[in-house]
Image 1 (cartoon, one colour):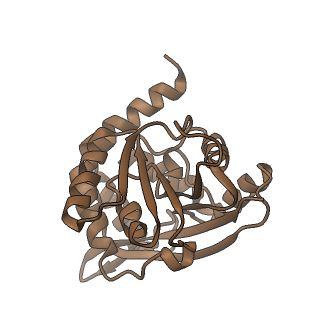
Image 2 (tube, one colour):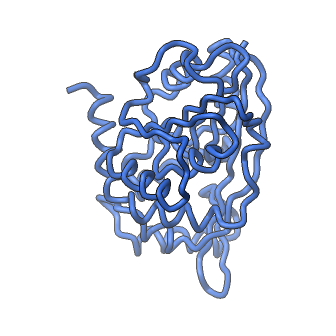
Length: 259
C-alpha cells in the first residue's frame, strides 16, 4: 500500500465520521453568505467540475448558474450527503462521481470551470491535484481553489492544531504558496480574494470532529488559552464572546484562467 493510499484511507475514515455533522455546519456557515458565482465568474454555458466536493455545498451553489455540474469526492458518505442536499434543493443539472482528485476520470479539456473548496489542506500532493484540475480544464476556462490560508508565520502552528483535531489534515497553504503552485504549472498570475470566515463557536467545530490522540476538551482549552492571550499565535483569530471561544478562518479564493 502506498503512502498516498494510506493518507486517502485516513481522509475517508475521518470524513465518513464527519459527513453528517460537517454538512450541517457548512449549511449554517453558508446561510446569508453572498453567492460565489459572480466572484468565480460562472456562466450559463459552463461545464463545471467541483472536486473534493464534500456535501456538495459549492457544487449546488453554482449549479443554477451553469449548464451542467459534476461533484467528485473520495468519500461515499459525503456524496450521500450531497445527493440528499440536491434533493432538498430540487436541482436537476448535477451528477455525483466517486473518485480521487489526483487521478480524475475525465478527458483533457472536458470542463470550462474546475473548482475545489475547503479541501487543499487535506491533499498529500496538492500540486498533482492542481495539475489534474488544469488538465481537465479547457483553454480559456477557469481553475478555482478556495481554502484556508493562514499567515506564513502561523502556518506551522495552525497545522499542528488542525492535525490534533483532524488527523487527515495535511498542510494549510498561505496564499503565496497557492499562487506559486499555479505559477509552477504555467497557469500565470491569478485573481485572488481573501477574507475571514466566521466567527463561529469552536465547540461547534469540535462537535463535528473525531480526534484520535487528543480530547475535545483539551483542544478547546488550547484555543481558549490563545483567545485569552489575544496574540493569535495559532492563526484562528480566536476570541471570547460571552465566555464562549470563537474562531475565524482566513479564507482565500484563487482564480486562474487557463492559457
